[in-house]
Each structure stands twice: as C-alpha cells, then as structure tokens.
Image 1 (cartoon, rainbow, N blue to C red):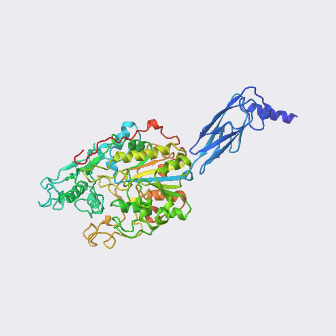
Image 2 (image 1 turned 135 degrees about the vertical axis):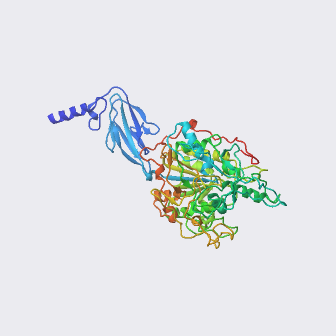
Length: 589
C-alpha cells in the first residue's frame, strides 16, 4: 500500500493540468477540456485522436467531455518520418492524455530527399537569363530581399557599367536586292570596327520581339565576334548575329515574312517586373540560380535532346525531315525500366500527343501513348493524388504558350505574358493542392534565344569544379550534321567550343517547392541536365551519360529540415501575371 501511494503522488505532481497514461484513473474533472495539436518540422503527416474529434490537419483542436481519456496517433505521409512528441507527451509512441483544464501537444515530422514524391519540370522556349532576369537584383534590393544575383551589370550590387555590344557600322546600312548585300559590319581587319557604335542594353516595352537565332554558328559568333574559334569569350557578337539574320532573310523582298530590326538591337533588350511580375516574385521568394546554363551552344532541338538523354549524339541541328528516330535511352525509359511512374502533360493538341514533345524524337515514345495526356489532366492529378513520380509539362509549342519569339512583323506573336500567365496557372494550382507537400516544380528555359549575356558558357561545372564532359565521346562533325561552311567544320581550324565540353548560355531557373530555400540564389555552375541528375539521385537510377553524371543533384536548392514554404505564399500576396503589355515587332523598345 505504501508503494502504491508513492506512485499515485508522483502521478499527481507531474502537472496540475496534464496526466499521462497510467495516471488517467486518478483524476476526475467535471468540466470539458480542450486539446490542441501543433504540427512542426519539415515533414508532413496526420494526427488523429481516439475518441475521434481531432484529425489534424485540418482539425487540430477539439473539446472533449469530462473524464475522457484521449489517445493521439501520429502517422507520417509517404516518404516522411515522425520524429516525436513534445509538450504533453514525449517519445514516438502513442500519446495518451487526460488534461485538466486543457492541454497542448506538438507532433514533429521530418523530411528528406525521399520525401520528394513528385518531380515536375517545365522547359519554356528561347529566353536568356539577362533577357528575363537582368534586372532581378535591382528588384530584390528594392524589396529588401537578401542575397546577390548576377544579372545585367548596371543592376548588380555593386553596380557596373551598362551592358553593351558593338553595333553595325552605319557606313554599311541594310539595302535589299538588287543592291549589293550589306552585312552588319562590326569587325574590320581582325578587330572591332572603330566606327561600330556601342548598342546598350535597353528595357523592352513590347512583349513581342523578332526572333534572334541561337543556332550553332550564331552562338559561336556571340561568344567572340572577331574569332569564334578563340578560347577567349568576349561576348560581343549578339548584335551582329541578330542583325545578320534579319538582313539575310530580308535581302530578297517578299521571300520571307517581314522583319525590320536590321541592326540587331533587339538582342540587347531585357524585361523587368513591369512585364514579368510573376516570374520576378517567384524567382526572388523561392530558389533560383545565376549560373544555370543550357547544355550546348546551339538551338532548341539539340538542347532538348540533352534534356531527354543527356546527349545529342553529336547533333547541333534539328533532325532533318524524315530522319529516323533516336534509339538511345532517355530519362523516361530509365524510369520505365525501374518501375517508376512518369507522365508527360501535353499543352498542344491534334494528332498523336507524342509528336508535340521532344520525347517524340525517340523510338521509345512510340509504345508509350498512355503516358502522354492533355495538360488539363495535370490539374486533375494534383487534386486527386494521381500525380506520377516524374512529370514533364510540355510548353505548348503550337499553342502560343511557350514564350518563343516570333518573326512576322505583319502578324506579331510570341507574347511572353501569355506564356507566363499559363505557367502561373499551373504553379498556383499546385501550391493550393494536396500534392504541394511533396512536389518539386522546376521551371527553366531551353536555351538563351540569341539574347545578350555577359557570362559566357562554362567548361567546368559543379562544386568543387570539374570539367564539363563530352557526354559520350561524339564530337560535332560534317559527317553528322555540320554544314561544310559551318564554324568548326574544318578539322584544321578548331577551338575549345568545337567539342561538347562547354555548356550553352545561361537561362532562367526557378525551383518551386515547400522545400525550396527562401530567397535563395545558387552560384554553382550547372547545365540543366542537372534535372536528370536530380531525378536519378532521388529515385536511385543510373546516369545516362557522363554529362548528367557530372552535374549537381539540385539538393542545394532545398531545405528539408525547415521546409520554408510548407505553407505556400497566400494567393493575394502573389502578383497576377498580366497579358496586356503591347505587342509589336516593327520597332523598339
């Protein structure tokens, strides 16, 4: 009896308001009591009570009848862990409480890379980092957001000189046939033409501009207008190539849709938050990078081949009409082989859905029709819990939502605000859905579009730096698809950028997730085959080539301990992306 009395006293003295299991029969309360549960940690899960009243979330507080004995059970969501109770209970087992006059309990859930159950990536078209995010540091400074972002030098902290490029010598104006062809002259006698005016970067008002070319030759001239084969990246050929393309297509009147930027000044244009408020907000509040590059110094299709397979098999141009499909393994085939679910949400319609996507360039796609669905299905899947482990959202190449610049002055197109609005509808829906808690959405662009950048393609990636490897030992060559007069076609005249050992140009990036670090800017060099490395690391599948194997795994962008955006920004705090900016292409800005 003495021993029992001592135990009873110990139970009573634990707390005047809280009694744990084993003490429940010793205290009687004549009033209802309220029990509150708080969820903490970077993970997610649920807490339920017996008697049933609490089912947290959403119901995290309940009032129980006098004398009730309440047992709380914590269950982590898939991929998460329950790390323990605090407050009224401790440990990781069942929490049994019988409060007098109320009690509170905290359940802590943990997260890790294995908590990322869904990776979604979307790759828009042809926009460089300075072109879209050149003024991002100025925006961050104005908003009091910490960190530094390397955009256009005049907006950086500390600020530098206004970015510029040599322009066309006015002594050689464009003139159509039958007059002699005048190309844009920026180089004379192996040096920059002393009469070449400097074309400064300028803020664009129109959301539509004529399309500069990011193709193989142009990208190498952009690198160094005097000597494209040089190892020195002078980054001074952007205006020249933009002007050259227009002059060439417009030389014979009526032979091509009309264009008017004969002096290439559009290449120096940039946007800020006035035109792209949604992207500026998301890039500043979630995670981004100022050292994120396309994989190769050329146009869309080879870069998207790297997105699929971490190689273009030596190609620097799109597959020619009627060419056989590629047979090498893609990331989606790799997932398929390992029984990992995937899906491609297709924004275009008409014909086979595969034909609207880059995966359609591969034979593997032919047998995978069920994994290609309309983009509208994304909205259903994020609400119903049917989002696959890996998903790509096609940008809408034919629907006008891909943000690609256009060419026809008489029918202006390429409205970037329309594309940004479309992207915002997808991301905003994800943030307000049940799928938010365990998804990472990666938004980027496929190549720089021929728009100016002051940061050159890189020959080293990752941290610590390592060489950017040729994916498979295949070099560009005339035997594959280089033209006889293309840069790098002559084996006796070569340079470091003639091999696939450099990235392409910088492109914008936003990593959006509950795990995204707030206001984060990465300065680690990577090309976007890092998306493949992220997928491979999370789902434990092999790399496709040496290229994706060399990249960072993107966990640098994520904080699993704190899950900073576990509660996403409120809808009212997120800028609505307008679509009403003027659209014209026959003059600038």
